[in-house]
Every structure is written in structure tokens, then in C-alpha cells.
Image 1: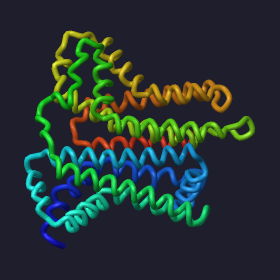
Image 2: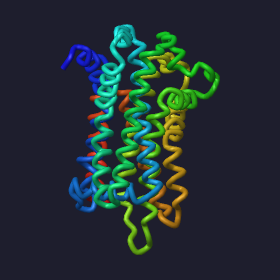
Image 3: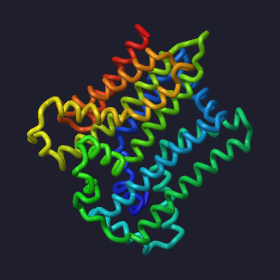
Image 4: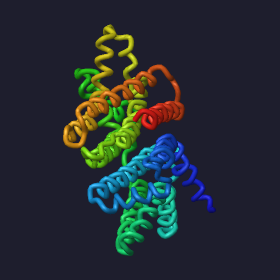
Length: 345
């Protein structure tokens, strides 16, 4: 392993996985160690049937492609921010390398950043080959290759054209316009301004799976257990947003806690913010009433989702810990809900 590659590994690859370890661990735990037991399916059978369902539905295929694009966008944004930091300035010296060696290092860096996506993408390509033939598998591999080359071009463009460095001030993090608006709307605008990719990925996951599972309910075979389990997982994924909101408040809006505002209005602010976070799921649930979902069950879904969001919001106020510790609390909440689903339905 040459010195230049070790520098790239230490400066870009390792910090990327260190920064996103919590989210990757959360997704891996949910996707491979909890939901695979639905209806008695083992890990391989569940993942194989899920991949086959993705390949057999244009909607699911589009959702999977959207998740892949969001992951690549996250990698691209990390590269942009990382290369703007003072300790990474020496990487611009890579331009003195010969083009072939420089491209080889950039492709390898992009490959290492995309390992989670590539591993699952290769599994989908394997399923495509067994179910739909060689052309389908080649199409999956071509899509993955395009994403990896796009990330490589992004890295190359950042190194060739560094541009103006972003100033370390609050203008990049705080939606300065709109402080006269209600406090919950300001926090929600911060989510859409700075973490729209996380918000969009969470809502795509929850709403698409909830819709696709619940719409298969009929009067003869009506079961909301599996649908609620996926719904609970999606609701808990909003914990990332709640944690980001709390860090934003602690950094820029700490004055709000000492403001002369009665407790009822503070609770109303928190309730309105959680309602805004839950709004896409609420719309999805209400569109399936009463054909695929009974009215009381829809109210139960909404009430449970809103309650869990409020619990996570309260815990973020009470527990002053890092993201990894907050993630453990989220997994504990999911475990409690999972026990209830298995025991009382």
C-alpha cells in the first residue's frame, strides 16, 4: 500500500465511516437482524424475496434507485466538506501525479466509500441474474458502475477546482431568513435546509413500505402487525433528525429555554414540530382508509407514531450524550415495540 493511498484512507475513507457509523449500524441492525424474522423468514430468504420484489416492481425499483442516489449524494457532500477543511489542503497536491495514477487512486477511494451500497447492489445483481437473466444483472452492475464513476468525477472535480472555501460561520447552518416565524416552523425549516437528504430518505422508506404492505390487506386476510413493524422502524429513523434538531438548538437557539414562554405553549411547539415530522406518514395512512386500513387502526398508527416521536424528543432533552448513545436508546425503543407486536399484535 503506497503512501498516497494511505493518506487518502486516513483523510477521507476512515472519517466518512466514523462520521456515519451510527446511521450505518442502525440501518444494518434494522435491515438484517430484526425485520428478517417477519413471517418466519430467515435472513437469506427474506433478503432474496425483498430483492426479487424490487426487481419485479417499477415503483420499488425507483425507490431503491433513489436510496442509492441519496447515498452517493451523501458521499459527495462529505467529500466537499472534507476537502474544505484546513487539515485536508495537502490533498490538492495530488494534481502533480500522473493522470493514470491519480485516476486509479480516485476510483479506489470512491469504491471504498461505496462499499455498503456496492455489496447490496451486487446481491441484487445476483438475484437479477437468477430470476431475469444476464441482461438484468448487467443493467444493475452498469447502474452501480455509473454511480461509482459519478462519485469519482465528483472527487476529481473537487480536487481540480476547489473554489471558494466555505466560511466557518452560522450562515451555512442557520436558515437566517424567517426568525419571525413560529419556532417549530423555524426548526422544521432547518431540517429541510440542512438535512433534506436524510429527511427524504426516511420518508421514502417509511411511506413506500407502509403503502406497499398495507395495500395488500383485504377483508379475508387483514393483518397490521408486519405493517406496523416497518412503520415503527421508519418512525425511529426520524431519531436522526430529532438529534440534529437538538444539536442545532443547543448551538444556536439556546436562548429559547430561558425565554418567557409558558409550559403549555412550549409543549404546543414541540407537538407541532413532531406533527410536521410525521406529516408524510399521516398522509400515506389516511389515503388507505377505509379500503386497506380500518379507521381505528389508522388512528392507532398515527397515535403510536406521534407518541414515539414525542418520547424521542423528550429523551434528546434529558439525555446529553453523543449520537451512539442516543442510537442505543432508539434500538431499545424498537425492541420494546417489537416485543409488543409479537405478544399482543
